[in-house]
Image (cartoon, one colour):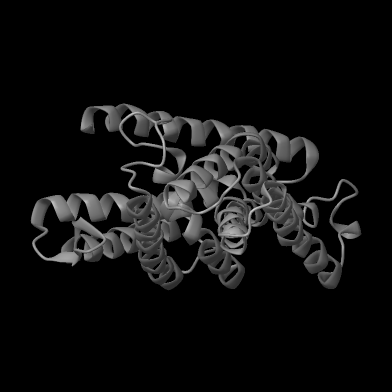
Length: 287
């Protein structure tokens, strides 16, 4: 398991670096940061994550259509981006009220797709909860990634990639600290392998990574780097626990088998997904 992670992890970092470089090239040509990541999310990341989420929901007993979940997730992703990326340039971007309205079209499409899928089955039992489950999965796998793309659009891919690495530093800190000195189980009924010491390690490592990012980015005050990093560590850990809750309810060890040694896409993205709005808020406050 560890040997596979040591191969898959660097490959994912290389993929992130490659996307960052491509995004910079497109930004130079088109004047908009985030286009490469938006395309990668829409064509690869979001569909895979939504497919995995729908499978986990069915394993947990919910009525979840894969197609409807993917459609809902794509709508949740694309609606806010449509209000952000304007071919005519920032001067022609929609006003705040219009942008909010465009963004809210995403949840509307997601609800409609889920309702149509349930209606086609002509079964009442579990229908409304199925709609809710698919809507939640679309929110999780579609809307939350949009916050990362909005963050890239605002501060550029390199700094946003740094924030992502802050979140993953929390993951690594939790693992290393828990394996080294972990003694007290954090939530035994949910994840017996996670410890209190590992949770503290997540916050400390993420705060240290945030301080490092602030040192490299003068526009980010040091106190924002430390406090923001620690916050991202906490929120990322909660995201990891939420995915663990769904997997345990579904009786699954991993969300999928896409990434050797790491499981599925959601097993890697569980912490960055929930941390995305926090990362965007940190950027909005500090820049």
